[in-house]
Image (cartoon, rainbow, N blue to C red; front, side):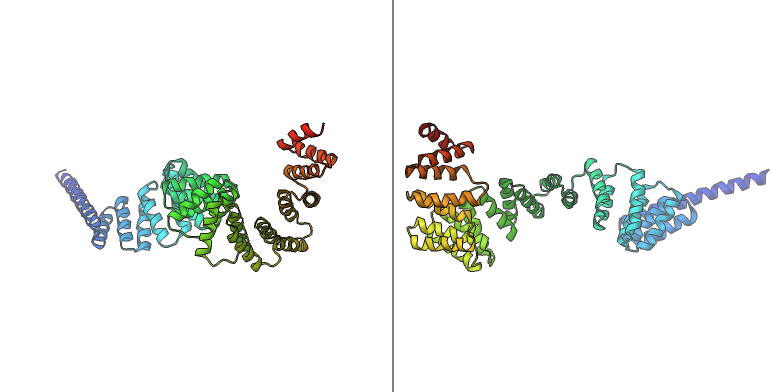
Length: 407
């Protein structure tokens, strides 16, 4: 009996000594790990698991030390042992994910992330990481699902919103793309790529003020890109803000050696509206140099020549435009408006009649001016027909004249 008691006592004391020894090595291993003395820490953790094979925390910390040494294969081996012992131990899964990513083992990393999500379904960082991997591999459907889950859980990350916006854009969902690009720049005020995408999207939607706002944000960030100045210039142009449009077109020419007939023509039109007639002539002429068959530039230049009283040059350009395209109703319209302003009513009637002939969507203004021209040469019957047509198209002047002159 005494012998049995001695044996039991020896066993207990041995276990206490072992436990104390395990505790000592584990504590020292963690101290060394915190000091980044990874090799010494690994030796301590190996000592721990040699005495207690089920010590999953020691395997996990050993894996962390191997990651510190960039020995990722050994890290995965140690972390796998930890997971075998405790299959729901999140720290081991997260560290093993890190090691797999370092070895470009994306499939295995995704599997570990999926395990983490099962154990911690509200871990938004893991949804983001898995989404990034899916995005990199162009599995955009899965990426979008993960990004959406992370965002719904409260993730405020500009890159995540940017990537999801890109996915929406690939799927032609421009409205949701805009929302995410806006969220992106609200978080990261210096993300010029997102501003650039917003500028283009708003321009495509003809929301020119918002296009200008975002294009200017790109410029303020020091990004002098041709497409941005084009968006700025064309947006100002479409808003009839000719002064700023002219400046933006000029900036384009300063920064880039462009041979673009449309930009020269648009700047020319801005110069016409700003009464810079000589500059307008130069711009229209440059357009024609780049394209000898550019009808629009000929009739725009002709119109300016008319304003300047250079009728010989104007007639030559109008004739050239109509020689290239006999159905060019815009050329007839420009010339007709000039004749109307000069009280050359017969010539105006001829040109307005050609506008009506060749343009199925003739404006009320053209009918009204032809009607006024007919009335001025005492063809009141024809005038009233045109006033009626213009009135039906919503012209208030025609309504007034028809009521006073045609009843």
